Amino acid sequence: MLKQIAVKPVVTASARMTIADAARTMKQKNVGALIVVNAGRPLGVLTDRDIAIDVVAAGKDPDAVRVEDVMRTKPATLREDLGLLDAARIFAKTGVRRLPVVDKAGRVSGIVALDDLMMLFGNEMGLVAGALAAGLRKAS
Amino acid sequence: MLWKLCTRPVVTVSPDATAEEAARAMRTKNVGAVVVVRHGRPAGILTDRDVAVGVVGRARNPALVKVGEVMRKNPAVIQEHAGILDAARLLGKKGVRRLPVVNTRGELVGIISLDDILVLLTSEMGHIGSTLSQEMRRPTP
View 1 (spheres, each protein chain N blue to C red):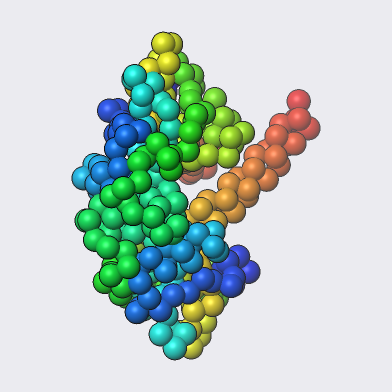
View 2: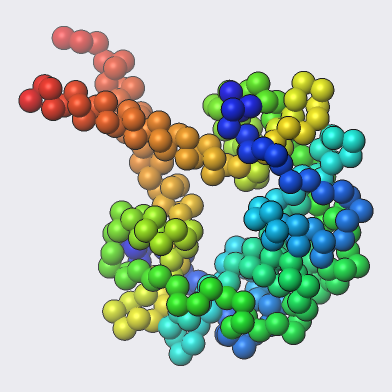
């Protein structure tokens, strides 16, 4: 279940925060994305790439632009009781690299990155390969 | 071989470009990183994250900061004749997500990322998977 692998605590931001403050938070917390919340519910996602592409490349002032002007709104969410394969399918549909994880009440409880899933599946593949190799050794 | 697989042409900027100019190149070319080139050779890498965190996150002005000040200097590179598994191993050893690809003279010819390699390897895994499932469907003699 996602609940066990979702990165927690998730780093959140408010919609009214400036981009300069959001970038500082990403730096301090060493994360690539902030989940924008209102009363615990996900309003949007802001990534480091959004800051580079939609603020800096656009020649806008990071002190004058607010998170709500740049964030991706109404993000798809993953229920924390979902399985990993379901999560992988939702990622494939959305084409984004990170999704907020929510509890039954719809409140943000974590974040999952595509990289987290890739790592888990990669490790599982390694175990399967190990089992196959052991079988081959026995057979010969 | 990597020169067949890597992204060419790669997006480059000069170390004297500003962070804002580099971000604009990332935007128009739709890439997450640019290779910083001096005399045709890779001198550094600058990513979208470096712009967000290394410039904006430090309250520096992207229109004034030079790429040469914030890029990751002397990046690990890989030869164009190396294989995909060599690239995967080097990425793991260096703990980076992208490698500039160079020719024997050390000149930049492309870039390869962890994502490129994952896509290639997993699509191969998919082929193996469908071969196995065809075999299982065949009636046993």
